[in-house]
Image 1 (cartoon, rainbow, N blue to C red):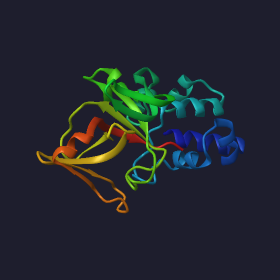
Image 2 (image 1 turned 120 degrees about the horizontal axis):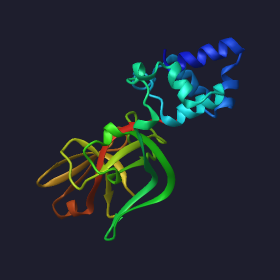
Image 3 (image 1 turned 45 degrees about the vertical axis):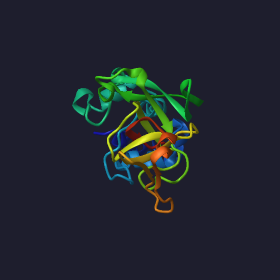
Length: 217
């Protein structure tokens, strides 16, 4: 049983509409529909509920988080649901800039949970989420999506990273480079690659590597 099955069972038992459940939980109707189908329409993969989703559904069901986890089968469902005890909160930033004083985050947007296994082997303070702006990375990333970033000054060619250009606001791009150039590649074909050669390469600064992304609904 997954979290969508529990929601469907509850709605059927108490004759609760999807609109009603959305109001009770604070989740969007579209996201509840996704949970019940247990499929992300972009990736076609099973839904991986966040800790916030767990809390929201528990609130709507009027049960504790522990009770909801028991309904999910406890440890038997670990692959589909992450226990709060395994989660770490990392900061969420709307804007990231880098200058002579180091990395600075603006538009503090609170924190987001991430599985400790994802951070294993690294300093937790080296991670942050960045909210994606614009449509240059569609269809891989959409505006409002969040990317988990690990701070590091270098990456392998072809990696996705947060970079700054002329110390301005950080952007998410696929980065391709050789000893003579750095190319920032968007996924949206309406945005051509930007190539920086020779001394222009000094305009680019790698802020960190994109580890994973998550969509918000």
